Length: 135
Image 1 (cartoon, one colour):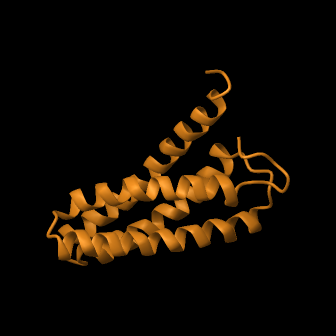
Image 2: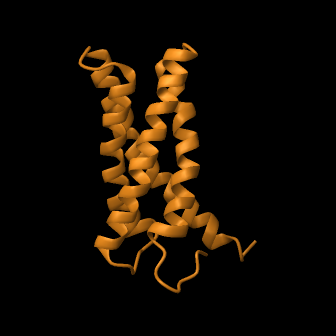
């Protein structure tokens, strides 16, 4: 169990940080949809962008305690985030418009899938220092 502790601790921190970014995303999603300013797919996308900015800042500092340069990690994080914002939009479109799923349930399903994609992408690419292990 001791050999897995650093990985479990990092993932738990990632989830906690992600919860902060996700809270920002959901707050914007609810505010924009309930106020009538945006439909669920657009509101979710705007929220995902804001959440990604929050997540980058907190993950750089707390989750991965990156020794890599902030510019290089920001570019890699942005590449993963843009991809995942796109995946988020597609999944929200399919779930809400094609499958007629309630938008908050659709967002919960989408968030779970995005969590796994971003964790492994950021662990293995974004915050990995040259020559460093992903443990």
